[in-house]
Length: 479
Ligand code: URP
Ligand code: ZN
Ligand code: ZN
Image (cartoon, rainbow, N blue to C red):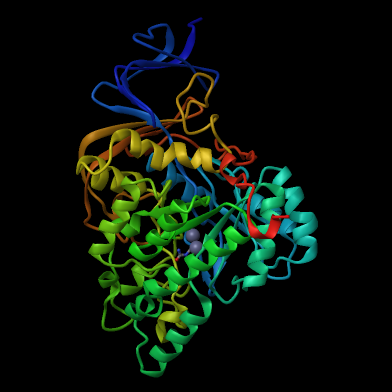
């Protein structure tokens, strides 16, 4: 019997810390050795000419959710197929508490959707929409202890928005339980005001979605969330930052020494508000409706500034897939009456890593090590999965992506494995593409072919995030 089950040989191994030429030996699903030559293995994969990196971790994806009467285009099977084809081995979707419902029951419902249906490993963030005394005092503490160690809260959306008092209560609970809070920063009342004015003026086409949610509403909400975080002394992660204004708020908070983290997404370095333009609902503007909306090319520069200087720790997809055509998609009959009803969100888990690699590494904006940190390692560290995930250290899960840095691909719907009937990046050209994915040592994707199955993915109870540790000082807790 050979010493190792699998050897990946001759590649360039990249982690968040180093770039090295070495082989990797894998035993029982774990990284067992990194060495100049690993020959004694049952199976040998030739990775010469390829990068060998930790599998991608996308910590912001939505699967099997319902909103606006529209049905999401991906459940766990198709969504995780798309993830694995995009070089990912772990995803962290959301379990949403419908207002008035038990959070524990909601988590059970999402497990029913996911368990035995997922091709990659997965955890869940909780979305808290109704922070009742039972939720704050009993359900959240028990769920954090069970491995759901992060929650998301919304400052917008009719069925999810929390008012300031509720935000403070959730922040306070997170501080007590040492959970990490993710915040969707867009101001509810300002958006409603803008929406009503635009509708009254007959401006209902998809483009006005972007006009109704200008950067000022994101900036204001980011500042408010940061202020609440400082008051309570609880670290927060501001998710899906779209442009300069919110990025600068986070940078300001970090410069004050606050534990405020930032996430940005593919759409904010590659799409603009102009993509939403279309004279009427039948044109393709609705394909790009997501929140916050894509901004301008100048904002792409600001996002790169934030990536390069460390304002952002994670780069996610915010994969939130809807169909475009049909009665349950973005063009559903109600959505045709106003941008307000177009389901928010776009599919992107499969193109997140290729677009960041192409726009970032291939164009010289970030290093290979930064790429790994932004797409894998920092997600694991931020959300309590490190060092089992996000690294290629001895003893880590052998979650590995083989990457051809020179492969030129034109993104098209025909290449995608997601359930949506379109990709917002149709025709987008990238350099660099995943050509093999291993999940705990199992070869689950090989250059266009899905080899894994829906029972491969395991649920990951997550530990507490070291990033969620309070600073130990803040007005609400000072003597
Ligand atoms: O438009 C988006 N991003 N929808 C997904 C829900 C969210 O806010 O992340
Ligand atoms: Zn959000
Ligand atoms: Zn999202």
